[in-house]
Image (cartoon, rainbow, N blue to C red):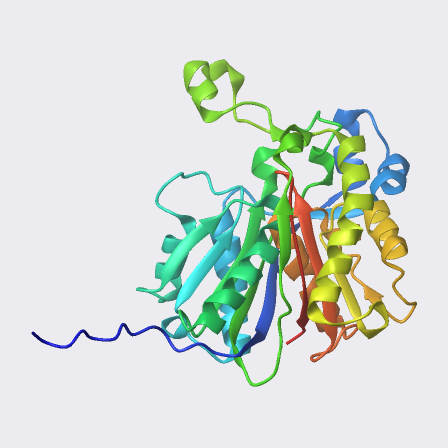
Length: 336
């Protein structure tokens, strides 16, 4: 009788980090005046309620995978890598309209990353932070060496121009990050969760099954219960962000950059207050001229701070995503 072989497992890596962050915004600038008419509103009302001055949207000939590919290529270039170096592709989006195959698999092929593992995440505005948490685990477990995480949305495809609840907030764009091994800690523990009891707070108007039964319904669009979402995000997400700092072993005074999901300027301001962040902390406010881009908003905002020099490589950043589901995820990262 032969001796039983010992099962071999992947060799773990102690630490991971962000190697690069890149972005692609919709090419068209849409002002408040452009969207105010159909919702019987004004530039002043939109600015006061949301902090948005303009939002970026893509042209009709550009789809969500085009945005994702552009951001991904920039991230790979910045990391000094090519598609063949990628072991896994994670695409977070709610605006890729095919149930199968995954957008990530198609994106991996476009990038020359085949046969990398590839899958989509449906976690809305928390999707990028979900992806970073998964990429961190994949790298540190030894399951992958380089993971490409993309948050991409073309929300203009799901807009009802007459809707006053959410549509005037939304923009198009994609942000991408490369996660790889590190000799020092670069990504803190991810604190994440959900509350499905409030799932209807941000929702689509009807299902694809309902559309198939009644074509007159038209394409599903998004709606939200503004007050429910505002209270939840403003007051229940700050403790999540605080827990992410605690899990990472840092205090508010250690944080140099705060990159929350760009949902609403008033929510951002309230979270800064709730967290007691010191005045030296750079706060991302990309929503003012990019709009709310759901899964893309955190990397878009981070890339902007790095490009403008407001944040620097090596800075300690607290990031948190939260949205439809209701789902959330936060972690402390070292900026690339």
